[in-house]
Amino acid sequence: MEKKPTDSSAAFVPYISASRTLPELTAVAISLGIVLAVVFAAANAYLGLKIGLTVSASIPAAVISLAVLRGLFRRKSILENNIVQTMTTAGEAVAAGAIFTIPALYMWDLNPGQQMISFIVLVGGFLGVAMMVPLRRLLIVKEHETLPYPEGTACAEVLVSGETGGRSARMVMLGFGVGGLVKALGDGLKLFRTEIETAVFKFKNAVIGMDTYPALLGVGYIIGPRIAGQMLAGGILAWLVLIPMIGFFGAGATGSIAPSQTPISQLDAWGIWGDYIRYIGAGAVAAGGLITLVKTLPMLFSSLAATLRGLATRGDEKVTLDRTNRDIPAKWVFALILVLIILLAFDPITKVGILGAVAIALFGFLFVTVASRIVGLVGSSSSPVSGMTIATLLIVTVLYKLTGVSGTAGMVTALTVGAIVCVALAVAGDISQDLKTGYLVGGTPWKQQVAMMIGVLVSGLVIGFILNVLNASYGLGSEQLPAPKAVLMRLIVEGIMSENLPWDLIFIGVAAAIVFEFLGLNSLTVAVGIYLPVHVSTPIMVGGLVRWFVEFVSRRNEGLLKSRIETGTLLASGLIAGESLVGVIIAILIWAGVQVPGTLAVQNHLLPFIVFLAVTILLTVISLRSKDGITQKS
Image (spheres, rainbow, N blue to C red):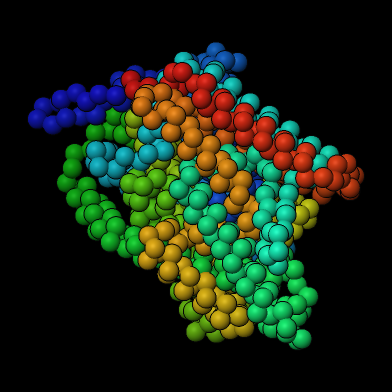
């Protein structure tokens, strides 16, 4: 990528200049984008319900589209590939916004229909796209030098180096096959356990264990050893400190201690975790989310001020309407936002009313503006979406209660408002990265924006079916799919509306999160480790250690280090996508009444450990075998 001076200023020249026209929003690109959007929506929904985290789909989608469009269809337009990855990230974003909030409705035994879920997701997704469109020239173009948008820039590099797409795609597909195979053999055919566990010698109620899932190994590799280590620290604190402590001090109790209905002396480690630790973890996660939001307040206010100043001065600027600078016309964008807000105020599906519609408009604009800028600085994975959603829920739930909308109706409407805002934030953050990719490679903005809306539409129509199937097969909020973020949102709304939560346990979690911050840790990451079983954090830590080892042995050669990390990341992404998608397929088979094995063929813990070890060795060896970079600068 280079800059070419024009007059007295320097004008950025993308990889495909504005004077060139290549196939872009074609039927082939749209069709492939739809397929990948659904695939990654399902995979990220399953993963997010499992561990409360989702992973970026842009780079895996880019390499898959390169392989399919270039390898199978012999099409050589980088702009078509850009459209495919844009649509795919829509599926990931829709899934993230939905699974962080909507599963709470299932936990209230309301079982929302697909019509309601699709309405919530589609309105939130379209608002996220529409509210980002007016910000593109300011954030992507005017602040090109100051807002790097890391995921968007990395994806552009992958697209530019498209001649290596076949090898890159093989890494993704290899991981996809391995992850899917292990999931099918373990949880599908029940040939072996997918969880190993052991008690600690002469340490009552102390348990260590591991879910032997390749997806969790892949997550750990992608997030790295520091974040994985802090997550495991939370798990160790819960399972080797808090659970044995509660068991020790409650050993002589003859009666139950709320919120449990069973005496502590009769509870094992899992019982103590379910009845006590989950509330402590929920309090810590809520506090961690709010702390993350508070820490970004200076950036929030400066971002909002800078954005408003930029929008105010845009009218004085001469707009060059070349191909690479054309957005969806402003009149259509603002008309869409207005129609959606009016529809929300009076629709009979969500029943959020005028108060909810106004709240969505205000919080949507405020937080979309902030999210779009923050992801430009720190990336989508560090955007405080949970914190902004929690803040929205706190305010909206209090407002509904003060206006007389309480009980189940109040909880549902408050959660619905939070869900719509959450989806809007997730989609806005992702389309910001996509538009940065398009800006670097020379895409046409309005075509990307239309592609994102198509991706939102398709994903929004299927996400309800996916959630219904997963709930019917596994149970949302269960041990198999704990849905940690949605449980947190449920507890917040319930706590304000009914005031019957075990506040002492929640405040213990809040205090713990504050302690983590004073220790210099990421309180939200450690809190998630407390909330989830240590069995989830352990394989994530293994993946983080693999990443550390690869970085350590490659530290003297920057180019080799980058190549190996990128190769491992693609393989890890494939592990996540393959296992998660097969998990959804298994759920569909169970939901459809297909008989699956009910008992394990092998009961011991050795076989699953060997399988997990083999996948770990595969990830390590494949990463270290990389000799040249997957991506390169143009």
